[in-house]
Image (cartoon, rainbow, N blue to C red):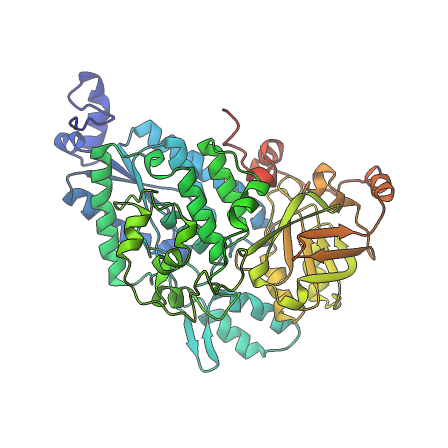
Length: 557
């Protein structure tokens, strides 16, 4: 093997300015002759999923130094989806490509030899995956670990229970005193929200595709194992860098399919469709909604977690963790896919010996569902498709027919729910919340949770060209494409129109004639949805839902 050569050569006189500036930061010239590892830190005081990185980054640095590398930390934004409700949610999905771009700019400008990505939450994990793919440098990921559950006399609670309690309070199903206690205690510690939303879905996905240590995501943030894991990552990235093992050597099309199949097998977030399709696009791998569906639909669903079941992320870890769910669907995974920690998927699973709780993690022969956790629906309301997390839907709502009640924004829907004007049987149609129409494709996190809290998720459906929280449950159908802003059929729906949803048949149908639909679409007027600043740029550049809503990436061959 050739001796390692870095991206910068300190002995070269033309690198004198670089060396001098790094010396000013406290680095010695001899430090710059080692692999310089950029540590992409998403620490922030205002996101519990990322606050733990203030401490964890020190352990990563120790590992880098110990292995003969030189750590160089820099920071990126990490907005919290849970906090960014209402107006703030417009900016969340656009932030994914912005964060990726900022990482690519910093890492390229400084010429880091390898990278460690510290990330946990909904858009930060996929943004760092996109950046890693675009940079194609040696890299590893580390997530912060899970939030502690809240133990109370009534039971164990995690973050989706808090969201659903908003709906319960709205109909006086719980007292103000109880709601206040939930609000102040359910988010019990730092760490990623202890539910299988987008954050944990994408964290676990990163493990399965080989970039992150197994169980990084499901273990508690405060576990001593997390500190040791951080040191291990710091040491390992130096080895990968010296050996020249790049992102593309670990993450291949086979890896992506492994990750997607595991998401489907564990009841993951519908938002995974956006992020996996976007990542595939940056990697040059064709993948749209149809391809996403084809890859996942035959994989049995062997586990599901809060809010779709009673089990939280720590329950997942104790039940055997990600290794156990990978083992359960072993025959659906490519065993030759590489792991950055060393070896292959097949070799890891051959060594797997953890005790598995069958109540939490089923076998592929006795699954919860025989055909994955998602259903991609088509019909005259969504010619290009839409998606629902069927593992979060009660069986009696797999088929539903009801009258449409239309809203041209999430805000209008929230007002109706607060006023308790939603009736059993309704199909709530929320449009002009797609990537362009929102703009920003807001998630209907709070309305969807309120529907559950108000007890309407067993009789009402939601249909939107926006998206939902990864932890949504109930018949919440999102990503309707084409979106209303682009003249999609969802723009033509009127109050009282009957809509039939059949999850088993993968259909969604607006009960009007083709002629009537065409006539209505000819008279559609867009509502006033302003797009100031970066949102205007996003609206002009963003691709469709089917392609992952990229706007800064995936445009050039």
